[in-house]
Length: 322
Length: 185
Image 1 (cartoon, rainbow over the protein chains, first blue to last red):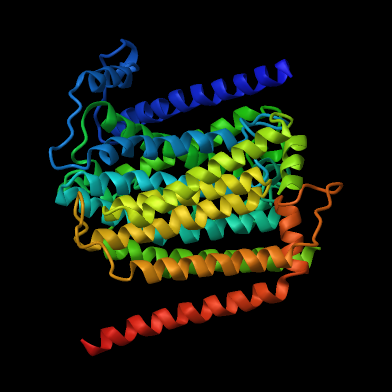
Image 2 (cartoon, rainbow over the protein chains, first blue to last red; image 1 turned 180 degrees about the horizontal axis):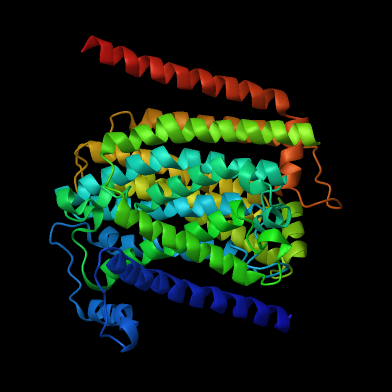
């Protein structure tokens, strides 16, 4: 029993450390990659070597700032919102398997449903922030967040359902176990839909209408300062890690390497996740922001039909090969 | 209820049977409290957020009854979509911060009557339908995805299909209604 408890404790600590470190790594990568794509150097001083400690310094800065709550705001909800936005990603990280066998924070039987359900809860934080700030820009941001979530949740679910059909299981380790290389061409449409919808759910560019800084300042987070603001930022980067990890596990075969080179195990998962995170950053630098109507149109007239077509294809192939 | 709770205890080995039952009761009380606050609070958005607590509490109850799949679907559909839709609707109104004195209805007592009658009918139907049903504790735990799926698509496939046709009709109806308004403009 005590070794059980120790095992659980160690897993929780490992997931927590990953939750604290990986988003910072992604953030720092974004600083540097964006800078080099734009012909700049990015942070160079903090920490000495290529400004590696810039985000640590940012964290210290955020902790020192005053924590302001607007006078007309709904105090308690305003203060609760950042935690509601951040915690779901920690829970999701628990269920993502990174290696073969038992390398997962906590095995969840209905893993796909768990991660998608909990990720959806995170958006409630943005909605709470948008409404409770008593600010018209925040409210507009909240509205856009809600509209975006409603539009993109469906294609994401459908794409994930397609993989679950292909694998014949809804547990995440089970899906990776059932993976074969020809799943990549077979599920490629679903994968693209999932990744795109996930980007939209995270409000990352080009889907950053809810925080469009040139129109509504910073959307739902306009009134936030100090640590609470930092928590929203951390939630965004944790979201990138979670989305890329999930796409890796569902569509890119997790710890399976190409050409049967499975030897690296969990390193493959991290490598693929890092590659996808790079794509996320790359998209931010290269694509202009979609307008609200373009956003809705893309979801309802492109992504959902594509996801449905993918499900039909999966079903047909599944029946034919059985 | 006791049977599944015992099963949960055996499967997990963390809580004693009475522990699961105590947790079930406590979560039930919290859920009930959140539900009552949802309908009595004068602050509209708070009502929607208390609804999140009530629905989340219900999901935890499902978990305690080992119905893991149902629990996650509950979170996905109700917390993730229905409440977001509700909040979206509330943001389109002028739902103020603080109390809305007019957020009250003259039909308070009839509404209570209807709610109690509906609850009584539901409880009676469920109790009557499953009075003689016994849960088989030897097989796979009831409520896992596999078992739920098999029951749903073997024993209950006709009601399932009927429901999906009903939902499709509602979807088409919603599209028709919204289109007609556009033409009138």
